[in-house]
Image 1: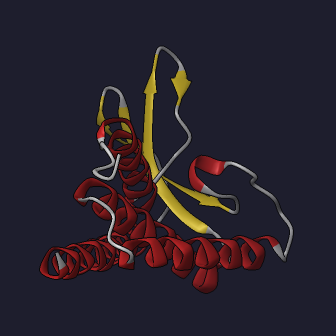
Image 2: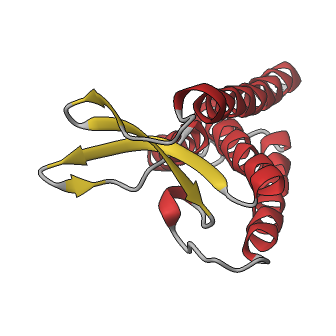
Image 3: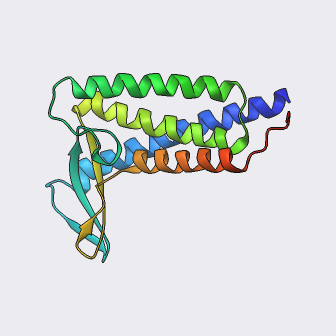
Length: 162
């Protein structure tokens, strides 16, 4: 059991680090090359690359112009990450462990942006029939995927003690 927990911790932490690296690399590329100068680039009939500075949380929720907003959101994100890492080290099932890694990596990837830029760089714009989904990035995608894994785990995981 200990080897399984150690392996899961490594996988979860590895996913977190991978998400942070992919998120920051993609944002660096978007900011320095693709969106220099900022513009709309049609990639597919339903997908554009854009540059949006998000001062809120994922998908623009709680977007505010407050100077303290990025600090407050970063502190909350770090606190949530600490709680999730405690859960990871207690040994959840595989899907939940991967979900934790994805959420932690995404949250910390966006915290890096808030610390450096005071806002998060979002650049993927999906749209259909004149409606646009809020712009997002790799970190937001990882958070969404991680939350989905954790929901699936909670729906299908059976507690072995019951």
